[in-house]
Amino acid sequence: MRLEGLSRQIALSMAMMAFCVTVLVVVTGFTFYYVAMTYWPVQFEAPGWKMTAPEWVWLISSTVAGLALSVVMGLRLARRILAPLNSVAEGIRRVAQGDLDARAAAGDRSLREAAALADDFNALADQLQRMTQEQAFWNAAIAHELRTPVTVLRGRLQGLAEGVFTPDESQFRRLLVQVEGLAHLIEDLRAVSLAESGHLDLQLQETDLAAEVRAVVEVFGDALRAAGLTPVLELDGRPARCDPVRIRQALLALLDNARRYATPGAIRIAAWVENGRCHLRVEDDGPGIPEELAPHVFEAFRRGDGARQRGSGGSGLGLAVVAAIARAHGGAARCAPGPGGGAGFELIWPG
Image 1 (spheres, rainbow, N blue to C red):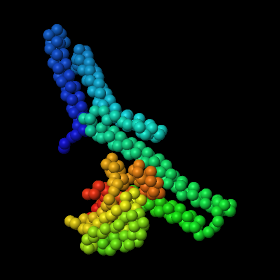
Image 2: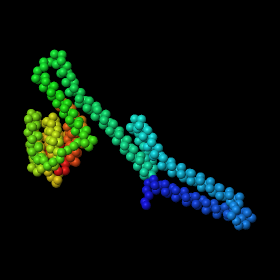
Image 3: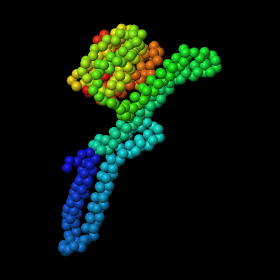
Image 4: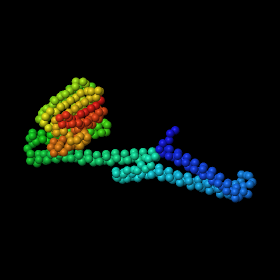
């Protein structure tokens, strides 16, 4: 049986302790009898089982020395083992008191199990700190996104109640727009939350991906053309295995993102199946994604400075929903610049 880490250290320490005690007894025994036979030969001339006083002294001295050596080696090993364990215990107490910066010291790396325990605690503390920070960020972001439509609704309804506004069709349509925005925000939050918890249910089936893309573009085409965008379709007729409802939701989010932020021009929508993997790509003519922002575009509530300045009214969840749907299909979403310098978003999943 191969011993490693803490087990090996304990075995080696016990073996070393037994060896040292044995050597101590043998060496002191030979030394004792050499001195005794040299200086007190009369005491040891008569053979027998009865121990003499010098022998008792030697036996007690050897035992005490062996015990002292064992205690010293045991304490040394205990300190090495307890150092990371005490550090973990102290870290747990600090985390329980709300100090999420607490970390444990692994100490002696030769004690692999104890060092691994400290490393696992540190990883857990890192994850807990990250999740707490993300929760605080999400709470602030959701409150920010809800504040504008709720404020508008409250002002309009108060104005209608006090007779400031005339209750006509245009007023009700403005209120309906705000309510629809809230409904979209709630649905996006629900989709992202379900995906993060692993409960975003899919109804996978053989799907005509090209037909689904055409249907979405037909529904959303007027909004794209109003923004100066001309859809250009590049579709593969082969079927893909996916949840058509969720794929339509992801495509709508990508098109809506382009409608809000892309400069007027062509918007290329491609769907194809290659080497057992399905691809859905949306690419515009600009202005593109800053290089430092590209790795983070699929994070919830992450926007570039240009998007903020335009005040486009997006919730900041659209691309996060796209990434969540891709992950639920066992794939991934990625952002890469197009040949013309615009932004390109692509979903890839096993088909």
